[in-house]
Length: 75
Image (tube, rainbow, N blue to C red; front, side, top):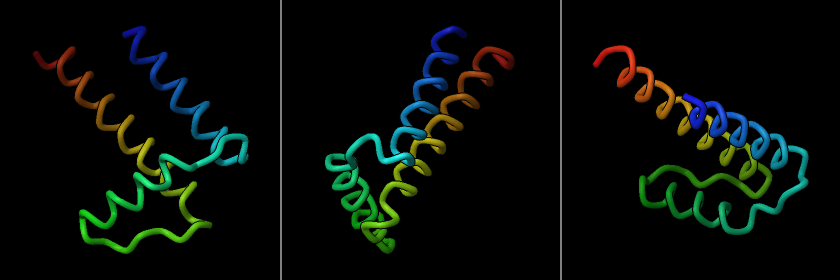
């Protein structure tokens, strides 16, 4: 459970750092463009890349939290 809390805190800090423009989006920006092209949806503009990365991080954390909670409390 402690690892899950640490992962959530790190994701929140990372998201805030991206939105405050304290971190560059070089590698992840290219990754987001590639993922959107593979899926076949419109790629975000350069202004929208930071929000797209935050959306992917939030989605990933929500999925991991739900899976972990299901494994702990259902099984």
